[in-house]
Length: 267
Image 1 (cartoon, rainbow, N blue to C red):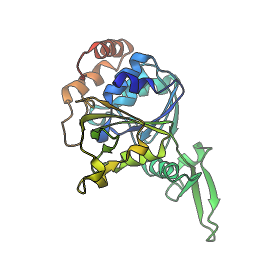
Image 2: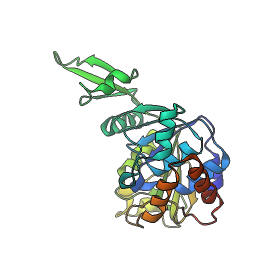
Image 3: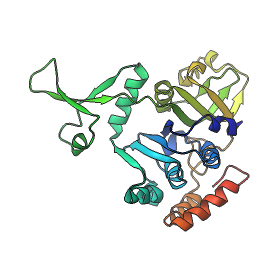
Image 4: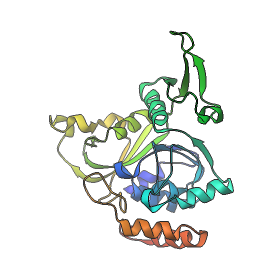
């Protein structure tokens, strides 16, 4: 059950979230808000949008590490912007390559990952946890060391799982990295099959093995109103309505009450 899946995330957990078009579990997000979870530390991989904005607006978030929180053509993520101005959340500003590199360190069990492209940016001055060292294999060659990101949970939506616990993600390799870097993976899916996905020569390369998956919940349409890979398009009207209502505290509260009371998985 999706409620049990969401209930596995306690207050104070670090949760890695996929970007909007890859596989966002809005269904599980609704349950987290209903449960009243607090003090989450989010990791947007490498950016986040509606999901993070809703969680921030609902008071569930303590911090977020990401390269952006945006609603794309619908504008600034309004609850994120309001929380940032009010100083009610901590933001660890990053870049897409830095997020991916730090997760890869977590995936590989390494304490850190070097990355060259950050040299000269203001981010290095503002991230005390990033260390600049001299390349031990070259002269006059500084390089940045990024501490591994090892979330407590990965939370995302996928097209298909089997009854053995394997999850098919297709070409969305970010989801595999998130799952392998995290201590637990919680996945909502469009469908479940009795077929062993690991035995399918065509699909096996796009499967997250069950050893990296902690819980699965069936949630058809679980990413709506967002786009979900090639399965369904974004509901532009619903996202536009959210963007307009969430510009004010009262508007967001009205939207949130409607969304939480909805019986179907829709915004």
